[in-house]
Image (cartoon, rainbow, N blue to C red; front, side, top):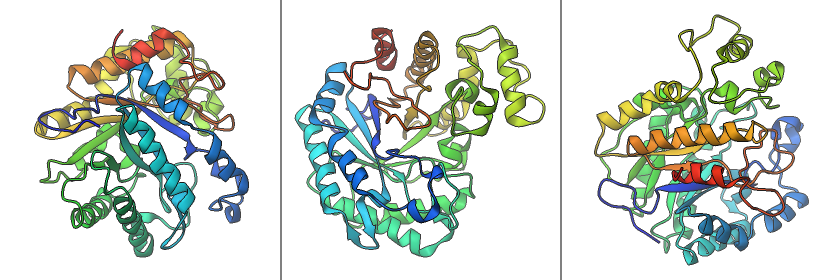
Length: 368
């Protein structure tokens, strides 16, 4: 695998996210609370079959140089300090597949106990000392098992919720210190609160550590990227198809009014295009300017699968072009989605695993 050095994250220029395998394999919000944190026989069968070496080869042949593989805490941790050996072995096998095809890897803790994106939990990770000890302990166990894979990067937590940034800064700092106690050079990825919003990067702690990489996610305008999605109330209620780019700004404003229940937060938009994306990614560009010696990575962005195909391609092309213009590497979301995923963002056909269009692939790679 390639190593990172200099001012760029070498070997991590353009990536593909993999969800739906060890995370987002089912949606917990529809389950009774007593069932949410169990791993069933069907789940284990899914883990065995959903992603194979063929998929890794497919991603490499498309032209991506790294993958971001998401996993949930309950998939690796059966109970405090008790690990699911078969799933750890599967994750390590996956890294081996990537290594053989010269694909770099980001291991992403997608859902930790106390920090799920799609359910409200009784206890928050950021308010519970026991959950925090388990969180740090999990990362130390992952470090122990991947000690012989120095190029693998660890993304500490996907999309921290809308909480006090100081609480997340503290837990991230303690986790980094713990990992640094056993590996001073592991590449560690940290994002801000509010679901990795560019706007909250300014509140994220910056470490005096060249091997900490900073990340943000981008799904603006939300009414476009999540149109007619069933997991959030506003897109479901609006139930409207939106195109990009578009001069029909009234359609966007209609959806925004329903979503916000108040005056349009972006009243000056005259149309929807690249200039709007540039404004809403401004927090990332400002972070890059304030910290030119730090690595910033757009670790996740995409559009729901049933958005108009030409619009998906145009939006992806504009997001990637903005990242390139500001020297920011990127990783698209997402390779494949399970049929029961309420927000399917997949980029390949479910059966053939072929990219949905050559133009879409070129946009994802920054080659259009």
